[in-house]
Length: 262
Image (cartoon, rainbow, N blue to C red):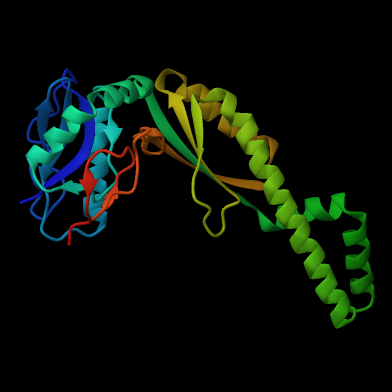
């Protein structure tokens, strides 16, 4: 049976809670596989693995528990290796870079912040800031809706202004919070979010960072902010050797040649 890998830690890492359970149905026992100065947090991998809520939460829970005892290089959900020997080989081959990355991430956590516009609030801002849009909107109202051409033009002008405002607000968010973080990573853009940013934050400074997020939200009430954290530092775990691997994909830090089980 293949080996499921949750994350990489130092061999000297604080012991994990006894009888910890991981993914699978029934849940697989979690264990620590040591190789020199490093260790991998692993369990047996189910023959079929799907991103079900229970398994996603189990993966997250293992990393949260491990993170409470020291730095962890987290693997993405679904990372598996053919066997323990393969994992140990990778740890041995990349000891230096993993130890360096663990040092960088020691004492940190990831906070992901997504931002979106309150549509009514941002429309009011646009009307106040753009005389041409405001004038055309007033003219169409007075003309009981105006012509189809005027309606299309007004819609295009508003859409362009909203897009411009999205870019501006994304930059404002980045510049306001970046000084409070060790590093910033922009996540993939998703429908409905004008910004998707992950911040690497010193755990001792987390309260100040969250206060800065609250202050930014109060200063910009036309923005809706979603904060998720503290998280394992998924977005900051990559090492220079991360690359696409034949027969599978590498995880966030390019360690084990992985495959999606099932």
